[in-house]
Amino acid sequence: MTVTQQITGPTTTLPWEAPGPGFWRLDDSHFPKAATGYFIEALTEIASIETFQGFRDYGLLVAGYEAGAVNGYVYVRLRFAGAPAKSGRGGRGTPPPFLLRLLFALHPELRYRKKRAALAFATKQWRQDQARWQQELEPRLRARLQALQPVDPTGLDDAALRQHMHATRRAFFEGYQLHVNLLPVAVLPVGDWLWHTCAWTGATLAKALQVLRGRAQGAMAPLMLLDRLVEAVHSEPVALAILHDRRTNATDRLERLREASPAVAARLSDYLHDYGDRLVTGMDVCELTLRELPHVLLGSIIARVEGQATHQEKATAEESAAQLRHRVPEARRAEYDALFEEACFAFGLREANVGLAMYWPVGLVRRALLAAGSRLVARGLIEQPEHVLEATQAETDALFGGPGTAPPAAELARRAAARRAFNQVTPPDTLGEPDAPPPDGVLPPALERAMQAFMSYMMNLDADPAKRAQATEKRLLGLGVSQGTYTGRARVVHDPADYEKVEAGDILVAPFTSSGYNVLLPLLGAIVTDRGGVLCHTAIVAREFGIPAVVGTGDATARIPDGARLLVDGTQGVVEIQAGAGQ
Image 1 (cartoon, rainbow, N blue to C red):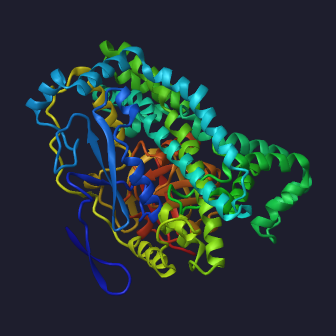
Image 2: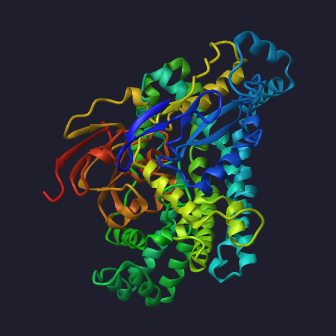
């Protein structure tokens, strides 16, 4: 497949060939831009693990996934347990129905998964795994990150810096694998309830999910430490004066806040200790951490101090829940109540663990790599510190005198330029030919229920481009995922540097948002994104914060002028451009 697209300069014909046999989907719900060389290598290595144990434990047919990059964009395809080999690559595709029936009777792995699916629903296994996360996995991962966090990579010698880069990389791998293995714990109960609820009531997915508002408290965790800091600032007149001194830049004001009182200094340190080195603007190592966005941090503090706080309307969620339950056929209500209870229990885990398991470790990787990059620039081995993000780990080791061949500075600069150029193109949503899904009734009942629940959740992380409503010149349509309306100034964000212009009360217009954005949501009045579905991170976090949000518009970042006045209707999924920039 080739597509003629304008990158920079002359129009270029780009090949878009699948990374391997089978059907591949663009993973733009996590990686909407071309990825760095470091991240592509890391993601490919993580995906190469033969089996994700969490999926196996719940009896899901998904054994794992493959990841590959095409013109810098990340594409993934699922691997299915028991599937026959294709093109010598093994375990890809869905077996034909007759073979699938035979495999479930004879294949040891599929027999095991059939048993585990039934057991997961019978024992509510997600409750045990949720407890294990809270009591064992989360404390262990947090302790590991807290041991890495105080290390200043700029003060290490070359050998120690190489060791630190490898240590942060291992933490990244461990956290990523943990997050993926915990997906069924959060996804199955919610997807099971969602699929049954929509079938019984005819409610849209967005309407149904409104009743889970307030259940993903992990998304609100940054507010707890932020509000402790705000309390300390409120009690110090000097701190309040510093906060509103617009003549001083954000970095200097934050430093002066530290000096205002021991209480303010301690609580600012507490907040930055937990959230300062987490990625905020995305998942790749080229994205920014909160510590690199002092303007955003300061704006969030000001927004809370001035009472521009978001709030949850618990009564509205309870009323919506009662109305939705009333639409369930009476004969199904007891079953509905049981499913709803489990969905409420599990709903917050995905948001609770992703920050700790992914955004924090990758933020520490970024800090180590940039320290290495600055040292390499000083030695004339690369042109800019950020260029080290385009190198593989082995290449970075070689640049520091390790084995292997170090890439020339010009090569890393070329890779960085190519990634910037690829960010200007629109990649295809899919590559390759899709496998036909097995017909209904072929899978054993418990396993079919598990797969239906899993796919009901995962397929709603992004909007279906084919079902996107037609927009007009001044009106954009998407998915209303967080109710309410808001009018304000649009701030269009194309790359991490654009976040410096976001101020309290602005409407963030971005390709997508990640769970890491929850540290800057106190700053925002509303959110509009190009990508995303009703269960994407943007939707979940915005609902928890009570911020109107419209996702899946397709092209908001291209059509909305920066600084324009917008009306965002998160109930109807409508964005209106009321006035252009400066009007």
